[in-house]
Length: 446
Ligand code: ZN
Image (cartoon, rainbow, N blue to C red; front, top):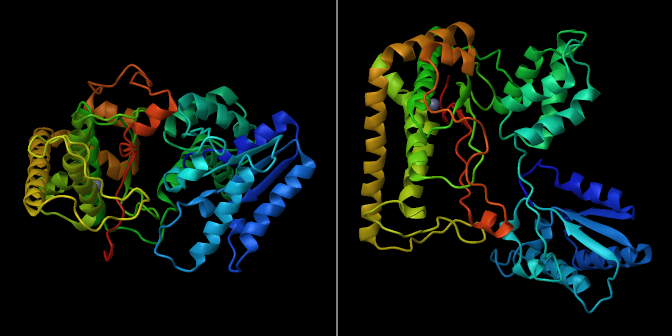
């Protein structure tokens, strides 16, 4: 299990290759049909076929399509068929049916919705978590894909892989393959003989923010506002100890980041402290505060930032028990099966207190950032000026203006690193925002 694109299917295929036995691959959605009885009979057929080929490996991709927990979802008719299919699968995997020498594997990116009966000992009792690769993993993955394309001859494979890996924190294997492919397409579009670094960096931008929007050119006034907004994010993050280190800032309008984005190096860790969450909030607010400081007006461009600030503030108070007034309580906003909870598990009084505390946290973060940015106004102006000139600036450009970041750690991977799967499962699943995108707010006509 793991996020999409991390190579779960490839891993299963590689297992079959190593074991040199037949490999039966089906997708969970293959079993889901409109017609009653088709799903269960397909499961029976699959296992019957496997028995004739044993020893062999069965791989069911997207198992969540049939493996969702039973008895939920309000009986929409189609559910019975899915439950029957799941029941049949459970029967086939059980000890009552002789399935010796057949190994059953499955992949999913939604382990949280699976029926607990599926995960019982004797069924899918071993779970392997496949996470997006760290920097070493990215180098190795890139070394697989890079030789398939033609890049500048004077560059060594190792060097290209290392440089690209440093620029792509949080990317999955599939996205890395896409970077290489996209770079080749860009190079071809400009009729180049080989791919150079501009093409690679264009490909990374493309994957983070979507297609460049050449048609939608911002007016100089809008562009100036966006540049100062992004400069606000960058400067705040630079001077706050617990914020993620900056990698690059762009104000080129793109598909999903219509106003620009800032890319950060996320800490490769699973636990986050309150200090980190607060500093992240400040960084998000930096955009709006910069608009206020320079132009004394606010724009709709900060809508997405504010949404993230609100979500973080609420999770500090109601999810992680990090607020003294509410105490050590955790009220999940979603039910276990992922559906949204409609009733609050606390009183009206508590609800009011929660709102108050959230407001206090957000206001304190705002004030702290405002003081910081007022003090650093000249530096912000310099960053914005450079952004207007170059449109995309990297960490080195920022460093030239702001000086070395006082808190950058020696290198990656020095944090607490949970190893056992149970520890992993219980660790917080909030990822620090790796990319602060500024999409155009709904209804905006920029
Ligand atoms: Zn922003």
